[in-house]
Image 1 (cartoon, protein in one colour):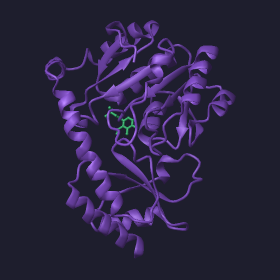
Image 2: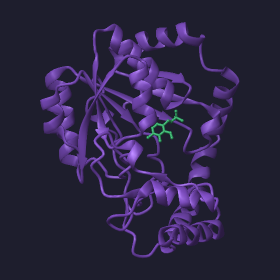
Image 3: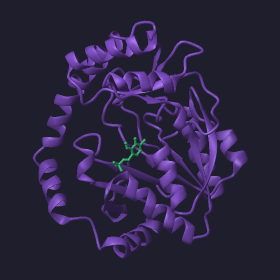
Length: 295
Ligand SMILES: Cc1ncc(COP(=O)(O)O)c(C=O)c1O
């Protein structure tokens, strides 16, 4: 990431970056926003709430379809390149180059939601799209996945011509992010504590992922090489909502893919988060989920 301090606006997580950026882009006349399909229903709901018309662009095994994006010609696009939510696909090198070429050609913006890029297990780190086109990419990141979502602390790395406008929008909205939390995080970073924390939690989350997936033999897991969730396919013909409801009656919380899919055209699947449970708890959860499937 090309993260010169003059480009950075600290705010309350990726969610607030999206809200501020939507308002600034709307004020500049932007209206149509491409989003990956499937994508997180909350993030696209938030952008719609702040005035953007959301257009679904399909994702395949290489990430967002840039030809379809160019054909839809939105003013901006929200993407999750490091670990697509919820499929876990990595935006391929070719698609990254195409996306960077598209924004340079059209003057549109990429909003890069980098929500869980610090966690990867079986693959190398991937460069941010922002580094390819810093004047066209709004990069959003937070400590929600690395430390705690309740901290509500994140940042935007902005094209230089947008930084002052986004900072002004932030000031008009709440006069700024609490300073005590920022100073605490700064000290934490300066002491190398975040790096230490990541070194400790990467193998921990990897073991948790393995515990969960080993407990679900025969169910294909996608996107599990990185991040804190896996997309697990169910046998053809399963009703994903019914399976999730049956699991819930046994105190296992899983999310069906359906609400995140704008076109409703997908094989049945569940989104399984594994970061907060111990290995024994995940083994038990997998057992109960299998029972829910069998029932
Ligand atoms: C894909 C994705 N983007 C963004 C967010 C919001 O992140 P934040 O807590 O930084 O606002 C989440 C939260 O879970 C997420 O899953």
